[in-house]
Structure formats: structure tokens, C-alpha cells
Image (cartoon, rainbow, N blue to C red):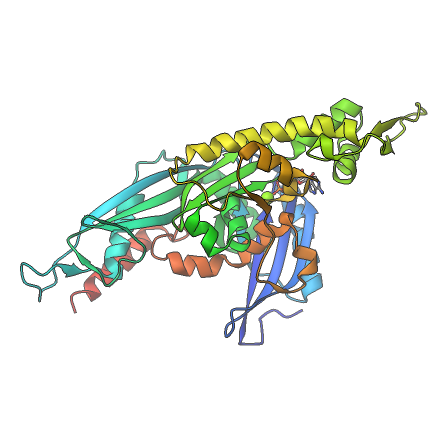
Length: 424
Ligand SMILES: Nc1ncnc2c1ncn2[C@@H]1O[C@H](COP(=O)(O)OP(=O)(O)O)[C@@H](O)[C@H]1O
Ligand SMILES: [Mg+2]
């Protein structure tokens, strides 16, 4: 296997999605000239050792990571030594906040000439925005700029080079329990993978499934996983609200298992094969056999009967999603409605049910702008892992706003350096 990518015109990108149902690893070659993202391999293993996004059993999680990574390595012919990881869980919290600074006068400017905003000013205002008194056991994972305000002028996307006296940054901040991130990063690093970044799963899913138009005019990305559902609301090219709901597609599997008195893995198969999110769109005549247990009687159930129960639970999940979208408090309507991603979005007929309940347009989100082994990844359940492949580009764009991996001291030193440079 190739340890270093010998071809200098491409960079190796690796995503490791730590989901509640699956651990997925994706390996891609990104062209430095054309920006093309060529998917080289994907590996997927049932998730283990996690609860609420936190590590509860290290060895089990490391085994799952190993399986996913090895499969992806085998398929791609590349060796993984670093990766961008995703994280989710109901303990993730987010808030909208802001910071403001006075723009320093340059030596040349007269009293009446306002001052030009530099990258350093953006760095300083971001430091103000993130200077929030958080409980000691929480870390800031993302600081995502929504807009800048210069004096009374709002809705500015890039303030560098503009003039003003006061610069304000409005940001969306996502926080995570420190232990959750530390343990996860330790697991990956112990396995020999250097962690280049840690990304909220809902954010990762949007990186590959949303258009810039959607983010501008308003869209809610809903990533339905096994144990959790992530909600991320975009408007005006920024994240206005995000949340993790503690319910996902496993609750549907659980209902099927209880209702039909079968095991979870049998219920999982039945859900994927026969369930519909809308009972009215499934047949009363099409019946399937239930697994026979201990010489018991053979039983048959119609797809319609199964789907009645499935619809009730899917409705509940969608109602919780609707409530969460309302919390975004966006006066303007979300022009592009809702994009559904995650394995749970693969439930048959979930789009018409979602349209009915959310009263918005709904589409399924799949990874876009990908070449190479596209076929295996062109479905909603791969959006998070493919999204992670794009993180380094996003991170570079966000800098200096979002640099959570840099310790505060290092950030302060960097800031000091740019500040001192400003004198010359
Ligand atoms: N075809 C399908 N129909 C219904 N549910 C599905 C289908 N495919 C996958 N799922 C469900 O999606 C969930 C896993 O989604 P995924 O996004 O991989 O989860 P996570 O990110 O939590 O690991 C599982 O509960 C699984 O049953
Ligand atoms: Mg997921």
C-alpha cells in the first residue's frame, strides 16, 4: 500500500464517520488542480462501544474503527494515517452569539477617515464571539460565522478590506462535552490515526448534499441516524440553528420487533424490505413471512399492517423535527424546505410523509460532486462520511473563525504575531 501519496497533484482525504449505527470510513484523492474529489474506497462496520455519542467501551469501538478503516484501505489501495472524524449525540448543544470590537486606527488615518478592517480584526472579533463562559466540562467545537455588522451596516459576509469603526460578528456556536471528544480522539489516535478535525455530524452531512442556493435562501438539513437525528437550519448562507434529537430510525426497528415479537436484527431486515412511511402507499395484499421460532406456527403479515405502525413512529419523529425547525425562529420561510439525509431517510415513502407533516418541499440528500467509486456512495446514508472529505477546505475558509483544534495559547501567540505584523 502507498504510505505517502506519490502523485503530488492530489491530496489524500480521509473521513471517519462515528455513527450510532455504523462506523464508516471514506478515502478520496482530491485533485489540487481541478478540485475534483475522487472516491477511492469506503468501509463500513456496525457501530459498537458508543452511547449518546460518547465512548463507553474503548475496545469495541476500536475494533469497529479497525474494520471500517481496513476495508476502505483495501478497496482504495491507500494507507490511512490521518482522518477527519465526525461526532454526534444528544449532549451536543448550540447557541447563537456575537462579539464586537472597535477597529483600531491606522497611523496614517486622520480623525475622520474610518479604518480598514484586516484579517486580524476578524480574528479578534471571533475571539470575542467565542469568549463565552462555558461550563468547564464543555469545549467549543465550531464557531460558524453568520454575518458581520460594520457600524450600522449588517449582513456583511466578508468584512476584510471594508472600513468602519466597530465590527460585530454574529456566530453560531456548537459545543460538546470535553470527555466525549477526548475519548474519541484517543481511540482513533491509539489506533494510529492522527485526527485532523472533529466535525458535528449534521454539519458534515450538509457539506456534500446542499447547494449554495439552498443555504442562501433557506433549507433545513435533517440527518436521520440510528439513535439520533440532527437538525441544521441554514439561511442567508449561515447556520441559524442546530440540534440533536435523541430519536432515530432504530425506534422504528424497535417498534417492529415489539409488535411482531421478533429480534432486532430480523426487525431491521423487515423494515428495510417491506416498511413504508405511509401505510396508504403500501399493499394490503402483499404479505411477507415472519421468522418462525422454536417450531412455532408460520405467520404472515401484510406490508400495510406493518406500515401502519411504522407510519405512527415516523410521524412522531417528523413532528419533533418540525418543532425543532420552528425553534430556528426564521421569519422568512425556508425557500428550499427540507433535505433528508442519513440511513433513516432511506425508509420507503418518507418524502411524501415528511411533505405532509412539515408542510414544506422535501427532497432526499445524497453526496454530490464526486467521481470515482460514486455508485457505492450515492445514497443518503453516506452523506456524513463523504461530507467529512470536504472539511479541510471548509476549515481553511472559516479560519480564523473556527480553529478548535488549536489550543488557546497557540491561538493567542498567532494572534500576537499578526497583531505585531500590523505595525509594520
Ligand atoms: N432502506 C432503509 N429503510 C429504512 N431504514 C433504513 C434503511 N437503510 C438504513 N436504515 C436505517 O438507518 C439507520 C442508520 O442510519 P445511519 O445514518 O447509518 O446511522 P448513524 O449515523 O446513527 O450510524 C438504521 O436505524 C437503519 O435501520
Ligand atoms: Mg450518521
